[in-house]
Length: 81
Image 1: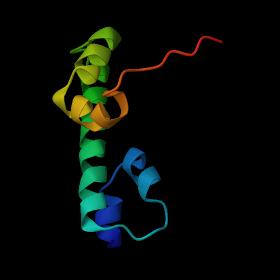
Image 2: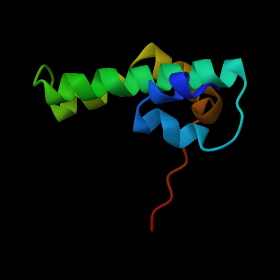
Image 3: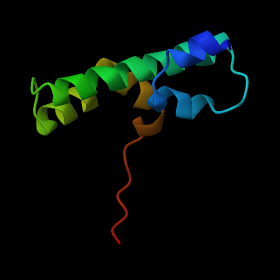
Image 4: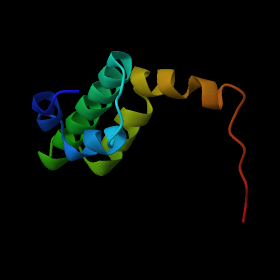
């Protein structure tokens, strides 16, 4: 990935890239994650939504459901410590 592109990404996004070469598909996924993170942080920091509203909005978003369906399709196990 060219340095010009790397310089346009936020630190949140860059931590996923590290020093390795990534594919275009991986880059697009990282860019989407970065955009999503920026959106929710803006909602919170601008006072448009409370922490509780951001939590519900993020957790109930279609994007989050799509990303988690493989993990939660058979339920979530609770381990009490």
